[in-house]
Image (cartoon, rainbow, N blue to C red):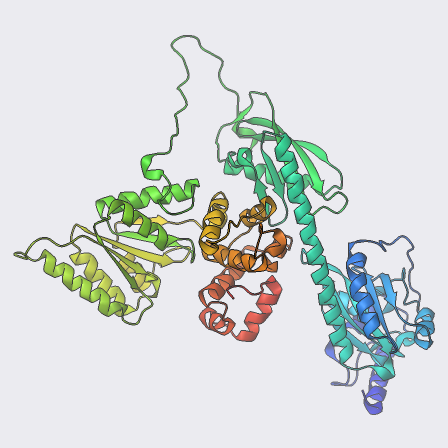
Length: 626
């Protein structure tokens, strides 16, 4: 900032202090004017500096411990320069200061920029720490931009430090004398803040591993339901998975409400099968990454009427007493796995949703009824149809057509003509049975949907027409929606996050396929992490993650540290809103489809590359699909 501009800024500040308004447009940055106004409303004295001091701050807390190696490294790089590095907590109170001996140290002591003092804007006025806190964004304040006269000899750049859950943890500030200010200050502050966040996320992963260790220990001594919960991660033993979905939600909600304390505690909850006692243990103690919940059933006969209904006082019921002979209650129906619901041959998966898909596809294949199969990208739709084809229709031709292929309409028209000829009176022999699978049906153009409609109209009884739709829901409007409405059946393949029981089986199968020459396995901790992830890219993303983990661990069992950082970190990030979750899942799916090519993914999503990069940083997504 040159002397003329500095002088104009000083005069503008003096006028603001006297009159409460800025009289020169363009001289003062809008964010500085906003900060001056906040400082004035807070009653900050523009000529004096009276800062509160607290001696009992958490100087050895998680933030300070994670920041120290970063501060030490930055201080070493800045040695010999008149620059100070300061760390504050989320209230602007100084926790750490790195500054060499000399003039700068004495001047900082004179303005109380030292551990224990608060530089929140309400006390110190406009400054790099307080203004960055108020705006939750980086702030650079130079010379006369400070509201307090006592600070005008300095320049400071503050950058927010966010914890693993996404909340503001503190501010990293770089301060020097006004005459030595430059743009590097802003970069150094933001880079150091990012480095501290990385350390916090890495150490947060340690908390998750301790949670999993506590979960395994509890499971070893308890035969009842046990769950481990963080904001975004849920682990459950076999007994917990046997609980109804509504009961699992009740336990999770009660644990979330009661699990903030630093010490173990107990609570009671009414489940479908009666009252239960919850033993809620925070892990690690003191600063929990999550909680382990042990469900201890009661012997009470109190019951909930509706198995999937939320708890309500009007839904309580006590079983009727025994009415003697002739009034025996009906026997509970047995639930053996039907033949049609057995796992698909050659594919890993045994969860109830996957077996339901198997049963529906077997029924459709056996009757050769046209079928729409809907599911997010990477859920295994094509693999499931192929497995059923091989099992139920082994002698039939296997035909696949890609709806995104420009020639899809021509190919479909050819098969429609073949079907029409085979059905014509006097045609020699009967038409050979076939399974015709149209992948990416949602991508068909107008000509393609017309050809598929023609095929459905001419299809011989021995042809099974299958349309695969890579989306959570099939289109209901437009030409694609109209042609899909003409199919006889539809099957929905649930995303992997809704069938976590399939993850360990898939992991075993994928490891055998990806590393056939070695006996690769995942440790129990790794498997638990994989089972608890959201998997927006589904099985495709799981295979990609395991491929990269095997590269990181060329021999031995795959450990949590071998997993890509975004998988481990996401388990400890803040809970996303439904819209943010949908956006994140869409971005990951696009990256997987594009093989990690961010330009192609941005084009597919209809957004600019700069926008995509900002969203990737916001969601903590790195290296997906590469």
